[in-house]
Amino acid sequence: MAAPRKSAQQVAAREKARAKAQELTERHERLIDLAAEFFEQEQQAEQIRAEAQERADAILAKAEQDAEAAAKEAGAKVQQMLDTGESRAAVAARLGLSTAEMKRALEGADTSSPSGEARTEPALAATADDVADQVAAETKAA
Image (cartoon, rainbow, N blue to C red; front, side, top):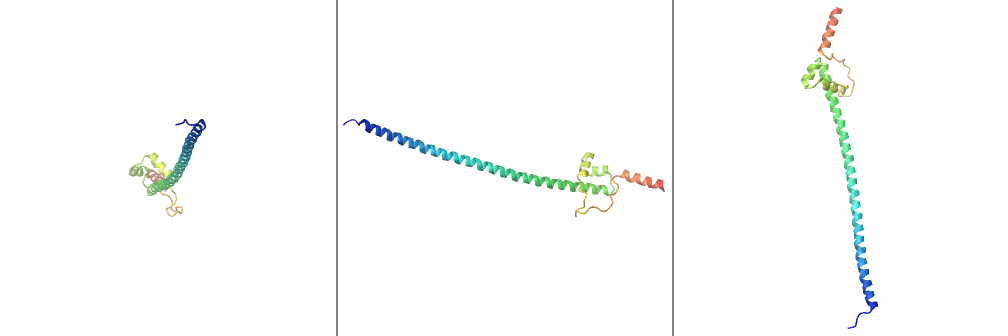
């Protein structure tokens, strides 16, 4: 058998090189496609996180509003207890509050009635000591 010619060897080598280059190109294209899909998924994950954060912020804001409304109502109940003539110390003891907690509750109290109208009845004396001072002053005047 005769040895293949140089031109035939060159043609075969070029065919092999082209096949290998085609294989590398296909692999490279597949890697580009996979990288693009990766970046799409990363972007989608970031969007999901951002939307979840927005929902969480909205939920927390609503919860804060609801908590403030409840705290105002609690303060209003404390004020109503004081309006009955009970002393601050007695109300604080009944509720298990310190004087500082009692003061914070009253500062945040809602001063309107549940129907939203302003209170029309005069506030009763806040403490028993105030009532005693009023009685003493009226007794002296008489």
